[in-house]
Length: 580
Image (cartoon, rainbow, N blue to C red):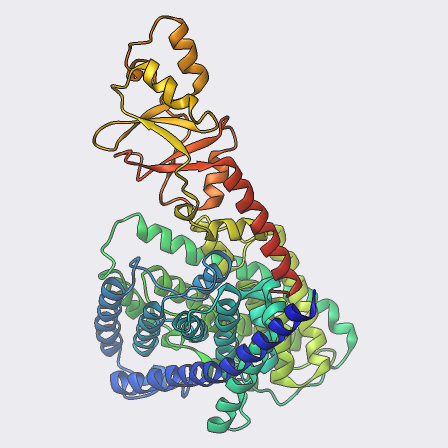
């Protein structure tokens, strides 16, 4: 790389680092405002904060749960129906898709609407998390600023990642976890190019959170010592159980959503029906509604009875599946933390009964179980390990967490190949494992590749006249288009010469025209064009508006497609090396 290019890259990195400061500030305040709004709405609706104390949910009359969840569900449904483009909820999966498939473009409207729907969802008691909406909002703000300034693809990705990192850092008080989450889940290899603004935004986000909340920890435990390294095999077993539970969580949540889709229920009505089901569930275990953070804090201090822990796992899993499946807005971070901590605590309490002198406190097992389930659900084992370390500050616990997370990952891969976000994207036919050059090709529109290198005649043109026109430009293909602009077919010079030799000089080309075997529509991307050309023989393929009207727009030549592929390979290489 020459000195001019190096200087350009350095200047851009500094510029993006400066932009990361306001993004970190706004994203952090967005995450904090999310929490404050949820608390305010819960106080308004229930008279108490559901997450201020585990006992608060029990104090709420059952009729109020039914009323609030039903009316709140209707409100969420109307927000989704009116403000969400596809009539669905948005979250971290959309941030990942934007980074990999859309060059970092993420609509600010969906970010704000999703945050609003999430505040109302959690505020009225839906069993979803707040971290996913915070990530989506932060990423939307970063992408919006990049688009407002008309920055390029690499800058958009950097600022999108910066917003997501600041949101995670502010939410968990964990700046390193914010950086790693973006690198591990959101941007992947692209994070190398963007590490300066991502780090800046993460530090700024953490600073804002600490300025307002002090040196806080969302979860804390008093006993951070591991009794013996001989317990490591127990953490392997715990991790394996956590991985299997995470797979069940992902599958059940996805199944409920697919099941509801099969009924064709209106988008605006679904959350209200889900609210009724959650109200019924609240009759038995109201503690599983809302975020559940306070339940986790209490179980880390004083373990619950085994039967209650088992019931909480099942009820929380069911409540989250109903909440997400029926269209409430929110994330899966919080529910995964809840389920994992209950599982770990249950294992720790059980071991304490049978081998009380040989095992550590149940709270350590709760942290390990929490990490095992969370790492598998979000597909970020390294980030999860680092969050555990930043929350506890204990290397002993972190090693136990590492073992559990790795064991959970193995269990998940043996039974299921997706994290929750990757599974969501696979349902949309988004493959994150495909080559980086394919993603660049998918981001390129065919409209930029349409050429006028063709000879066009009407269907009434004679074979002899068509041959003369084609001889003037033999390197291009001939297309036959009627007076309405509709594509009739294509012809080659060889076919015209053969027809003339057979005495068809004065015949109309409509009699010998070929129906095109391959067609490109204007809504295709360049990767879809390449797939169309796989079995094509010729110089160019016609482009039409759609397969119904067949209105002719031009052609795409093979050399243009080859050039687009070479460009995509070069861009992928430069992005991997952090040179662009």
